[in-house]
Length: 364
Image (cartoon, rainbow, N blue to C red; front, side, top):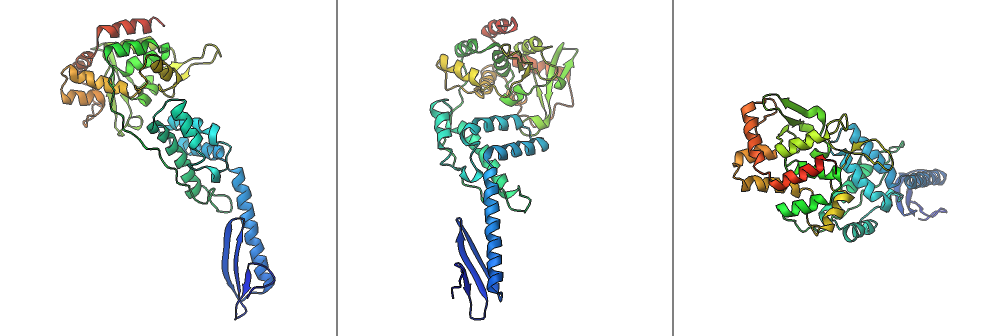
């Protein structure tokens, strides 16, 4: 039987049932034998709880949640922290000020359209950002709690990924490499030249540190031992430097105390800093100018692998040079082994590499 307060009903045994929709939320409870006043007090308390939760959620926009997520990643020493921050930076202009409840596939449509039509990136690239957004929302719904124990987000929305058409590898020809690298700014040209002569991935080139260098006196040459925490597959990798890659390294000495590849904004007179990714505006504009928009940064690695195959390098040696080896070399610097691998890596070098190298080292 309905009582004087809408949403509170009495039962035959003088009990009370609360069944009310309030601000989009259903409040339901069987309170048992309580007075009308007690039932009304209980309902007011629940309504206040919903009010506080909704008001608190308005303060929790995506930018705040993304900042919390980055702090969590930094505390856990996530290897891809810089890349995650890059994806969040891309999304913030579109959803940064939105309450967490307002972030869903529909509100992300403008971001997806802009990235594909204006920036010319693939659905796969857009999906990497969507995956980061989805991770932030999942944390807000499942892990993070307010002081009263309630989650930041009632439930995480389904963030739909874009349909992906697999891209085949696109190894560069010698002519394409020459045309593309000539359009790159000097600091980026050094990095791409190094990548195409070592096969290292984007994050390993960008994050290459001087403290990983190991000099081999007998060869008058260094290798770089990339620690397992920084290399895909969670194993150490010995980066072998052919003559071109070694000269690039030599040209970078003294520019930064920690990182091999850095960028200094001369116009703003800023200090040199690590570069987050080679897939930046400079890379994208350069490839578009020479009609190579289909070329990805990861294709530099494919180019190195293809040239090793074309040079007749064995599967075993290619595996070591590309970082696919299962054996761990990093604890044993066998000079004959490194010497032979350098010889194999040098098979990919061409006359055009020497011309490009000369331009890079001379500070173009």
